Length: 247
Ligand SMILES: [Zn+2]
Ligand SMILES: [Zn+2]
Image 1 (cartoon, rainbow, N blue to C red):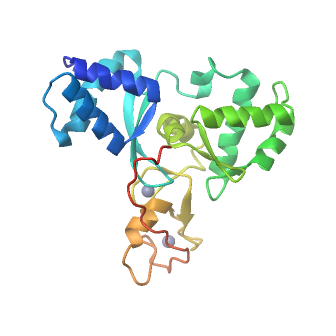
Image 2: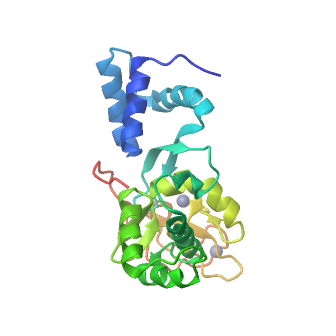
């Protein structure tokens, strides 16, 4: 079902094309700004409907503005994603074949890790098993910098994680490629990488760190919501909303 788009929708879409991803708070401000600029009514809690109208027109172009949670801070984000390609071939205009092979290996390392991270050392070592043109250390480091700049990966102290944008955009690909390894968060049911795991071997559920913070907030003795075993991990604090948390 296609709906008529106004100037405010177009302006919102143009901004999304320029920035790629934005958090919910910024998206709401942008929505308000677009409506004010084009003198159209703005209903604060109608952002999702406004985006749905844009999505109905984006569908024939295999694009979509999709919502997802940041594993870092638990905030909701909106990302403009490409749905035409089902895997990372969508990146072929920006990356060479061997660069994409290494990116695939990095996703592999992250998916098969317990904490959703891959160290730069592990990524450098994985170049040994490349089937396409092998990459030198400096080339690998340069590629990792670009993947962070292009918002596919995040880096902290030499450890790489999948960015929120990457998770929102690549989720169908990752689910299809890593069926056996991928787990979803027991609380929010989204795909989970950076998370805590129940240590009961017959349980082993995963919960995102921000979901852990919200779920166990105020509970004196944290217990696994699935098996009721004691939850032995440190419970992170619920982070405050802040507008500069771009991921
Ligand atoms: Zn979760
Ligand atoms: Zn459990």
